Image (cartoon, rainbow, N blue to C red; front, side, top):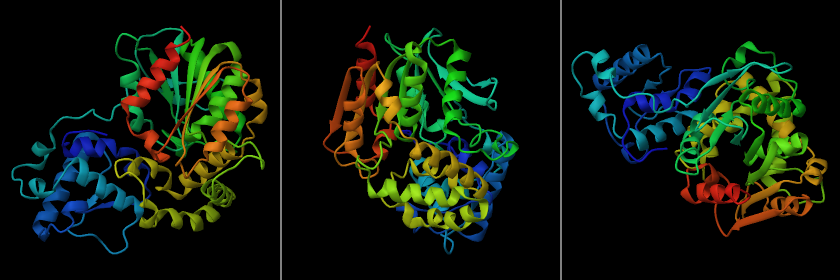
Length: 392
């Protein structure tokens, strides 16, 4: 997320994961405060001419501009249009531009490019993409992202936690079944053990022997399993608004129960996924979702095969019984939650703190939604820095 108006190419780069994954060309239209703006047919054509030039010049998948909101836009299109409204502003300067569109396409780019891209090839797992920032070394912060959320969203985390006098190597990665050349891989089996194997391959590739694991939301189960499995190679574990399963005796929110049930249906087969996907393409799904997060959170819903894969992967994460791993954890643990999180129950976080054998600290904020933790927040960065540095 940014605090300045972006160029067309910058916005398209940031939204590229969703645009490239979508099985259909997404439509974009005036939204938000500018939904009442009017564009002639010639102005709409000019917008599409410039978009095509941007796509050709930068190798990007681009949307199709509509002068007004179309009938029954999908949640993907509403999210994309609202995001463009916030980050680009009005389409009027593009619509009224003159000159060669390829000249207008020239502009700043690279805002969405993640630093330190590296392709990791390791035995037993598909090749996958990892990203890093900061000084190389055996100690590193490893961000374990929510399933199906592009790493692009977490570029500010890499930059912030790797900078300054106490900056460390910061590493993250994307699941190969959901990102990169995912269409070239067989459909995953939904094997949770493979998630831990990817983490092991990551630590080995970077030579990390003092890992500070940070499991964010749905990334928490992988962090818990990895902390238990890799022992001394993991120095600390942080879980932020963790989505963990400890069985029937520990509270889970209605959302968790319903969402896991929906994932089970979609994981059963592509046709079952197709019938379920319509639920997530309803614009009403966007209620309560921060507009600057929506195009990233909705990434897995751009294509039915991708959604089926996501359902299998994410169901395995939600179904993983974390009891045994939690009891094996001897590292220092930081657990952050909110009493008002309606997606993952704060009782889960408290229970996890009671189970671990290492020193556990629970930070429970009085307010804050589940998605708030995904928004760049200096307080979260400070909390992580202080906790990680506290054992030095």
